[in-house]
Length: 78
Image (tube, rainbow, N blue to C red; front, side):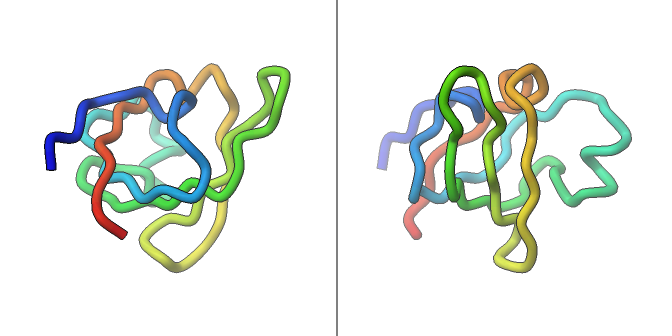
């Protein structure tokens, strides 16, 4: 599979991704949003709203657009 790197905010709902680059924000690390983590995009809310994720198949979090655009991901097979 030839997966390209995109920012998290541009990702598609229902897909699985691996984080390849993440903003240096301490809170993200504590939430499990770190380099190499696998995430599933559950929803991306309209009009600049947050992205709802499931991190490592264990819990869900929402990340705002401003931060989501600073996280780069590659699609992986589910």
